[in-house]
Length: 279
Image 1 (tube, rainbow, N blue to C red):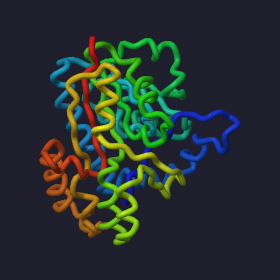
Image 2 (cartoon, helix red, strand yellow; image 1 turned 60 degrees about the vertical axis):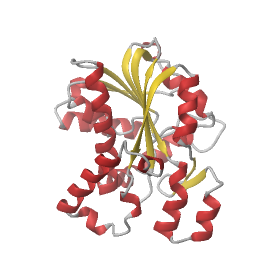
Image 3 (tube, rainbow, N blue to C red; image 1 turned 90 degrees about the vertical axis):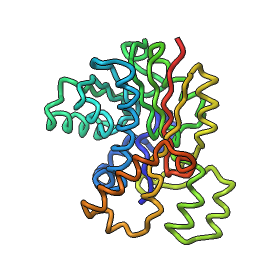
Image 4 (cartoon, helix red, strand yellow; image 1 turned 180 degrees about the vertical axis):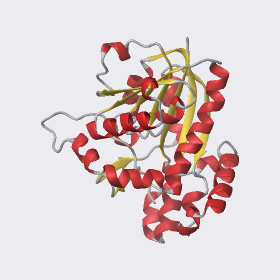
């Protein structure tokens, strides 16, 4: 039940293989993951955290940029609330799926899909003016987290909202110990910032909320709020029960109650930071 991040930023053609093709091939497995309880929780909690900030930002529709937005898991939820969302991703199959999801929901007019690199956005996007920018599950693939965050912040207007989500390094030893009962590996994970994902066949870089908060403040962000995503779910080994509607409903209720409560967000499987960009 690992978190399976979405496509990374592009690599040079001389570096094999093409990452977009790798993610396109994993589409069916990715869809299954999204529909599983842990995938549903990841999106539900992220949406709830965003909504409380978006409502404070404006009463009207917002312009949202979803970087590495994949097949629209975050975007369509926000579009359903009346916001206009532009998804940027490198994988054509992911973007095709996002467009299809928007059409099925009757939201095609509110969702645009752009095939592009976070570091080389088209001029119309890179120029700024977005009210909200999402950078969810991208840092795990970035060679330089600060550089990636800086590129992601560039299109955001002054006083706009920035949301970054990443795998939490603090959770890795617990996850390995509880899910795999591999205690030596759990000890080794205490001093490692690397983990693998079977779905996309990649080695991931793990971060902490504290590290990323320092990057954000150094890049001109303020009012950084820390949330935990899946504080409990990944430490419950009975995955079958999570598919039971009543149990899932109670689990979601618990996760929402813990998302901003100390100390639980520090060991959640993912962290989400929502900040304001200085004017």
